[in-house]
Image (cartoon, rainbow, N blue to C red; front, side, top):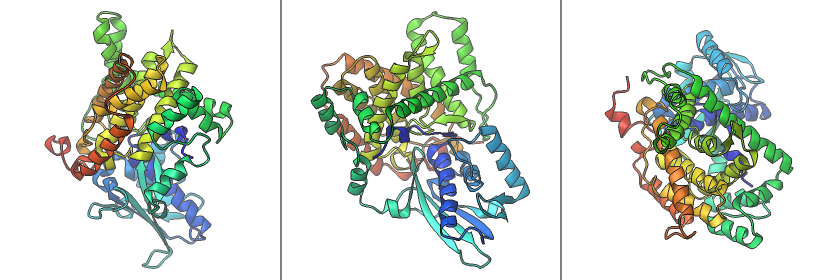
Length: 459
C-alpha cells in the first residue's frame, strides 16, 4: 500500500528525481551488490546516467547525488554542509570509500557518464551502475529508474504491468482506492472527510501516533525551510547569477504591514514559496511535495493559512497534508509526478492541485468540494512545460512555485463558492494530464533542450 508519507520525503535539493532518487539508487545498488557477494572485490565503480538525468546534467546536481549515495549518505538524514564537504573531498582526492565496501580510485569525469545518446524506454530517468573486479567486463551491473518525487524502481519493477502496480499500491488498505470516484465513495459511505479516510488507511501500516508524529515532522521541516530561505541572502550556485529575493521581499513586507492587504496576500504567498525554492536551488533541506521542483507550494499555503499567532495549528496542518497527500496519491497512481514524463504540469501542477484540495479541507469543505478544488488547480496548469535554464532548478522554477501557490488558493476559493459539483471531475483532469504528458515533446520535459532552456543564455 502506497503511503501519503511516501510523497513527503525529506531530502536535499535541487531535485527529487535528479538528486534524491539517484542518491537512493546508488546506495541501493551497493546494498544489493553486497548481498550478491560482489562488493568486497570491487576495483572500480561506473555510473551511467541516461535520458533526462544525463541531459540536465550537473545543473540538477546528479553527479553530486551519485557520489553521496555511493559513500552511504541518505537524503533523509544528510546534512547539507557535510554533504558538500564530502562531495568536494571525493572529487579532489579522486578516491571514494564505498558504503560497506572498499576504497577505490574514482574520477568523476570518467566514472560518471552522462549518456545523452541513450533514450531509456521504461522511464526517461535511467541509471545503470557497474562494479568491476579487475577485468574489462563488469562483475555486477544493475539498471534503475528515478520515477519522480524521490521514488525509485529497478528494471524488474518497471517491467510489471501498470494495472498490477495500481493493485499493489492499494493492497492491504482497509479502504483501497485507485480513483477519486472510489475515494469519494468511501467518504460518503462512512461519513468521513478525505483526511479521516487517509488516516484509516495509514493505520494499517503503523500506529496512528507514529503517523501524526511523522506529519508533524514534515510540517516542521517545511516551516524551517521557509525560515532559512527568508533569512538567506546572496547568489544561488550554478553560474546563472540568480540572486535570492525572498529575504528582501520579506523585509519589505515586515516594514510595511497592512499597506495593501489585497496585494499583500499575493506577496506573502510569493515570498514563502520563493524562500523554499531558493533553498532547494542552493541544495538545502526541503520536503518533496510531491517533488523538490514544486516544493514551495504546499509550505507557502500552509504557512499562510495554518499558522496562528506565530504557531502552527497542528490539527489544521495535519488535515492539510493528509488531504493533499491523498490527492497526490491519485496522480502518482493514475499518471505521474515526474517532470521528465509529464513536464511541469506533473510537478507544479500536481502540487497546486494538492494544495488546493488541502486548503479547501482546512476551510471546512467536504470531500467532494476538496476534489473540485484539486481539479480546478490542475485544470489551469495543463500543458505546463519543464524547461529549466542551464539545467538548474532556478529559472523559471522559483517564480513558478509562487504562481502555483497563488493559483492553489484561488482554486480552493472558487470550489467553496461553487455547488460542490463540477463539469470536469478530478479523475478526468488527471487522465487529461497523463495524455497531455504523453503527447508533449520530450524537449519540454526536463531535458533543457527546448523552451526557455534554449532561448535564454545560461551563462
